[in-house]
Image 1 (cartoon, rainbow, N blue to C red):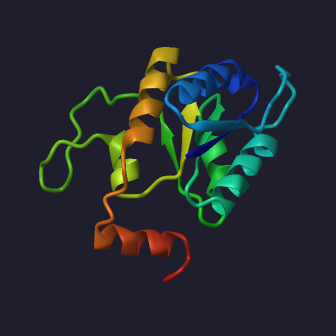
Image 2: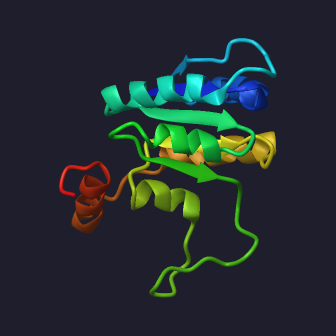
Image 3: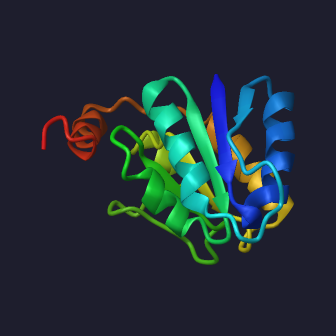
Amino acid sequence: MQIFFGGDHAGFELKAKLISLVEGLGFTPHDLGSFELNSEDDYPDFVRSVAEKVASHPDSRGVIIGGSGQGEAMVANRIRGVRAAVYYGASKTKQTDMSGHSLDILRSTRIHNDANVLALGARFLTEGEAKEALRMWLETDFSGDPRHVRRIAKIDGENA
């Protein structure tokens, strides 16, 4: 699987470490920038490239890294076919769904939403947390449940 990476100065160092991790897991990483540490760069320039690549390669995924991940996800989610989820780390409280079942928010972005881009906030995660999150996210498959397929079609504008 191809994994497209992008991020600004805030995510520059973490991006390089995550690319190495992905290579070690047997995936094919593609670095779409930034290519130098420049405090004046703008995350939309790199994030948009990742989102466009993911949208045009349906079997790929993207990882976008910035200070918070929020702005990065906003940019990515403007591209049709991209479903970017932001991850800040494990919740400090127990999370449950409507049925009272335990909920892992990171895995649910894949299982329920088939998220194809992961936005990470480099200022909110340690390197270890980011690596574990990425590994878990890449190893989690979409459920294919018809209700989730139907909802994703609406997100993507196919049955809105």
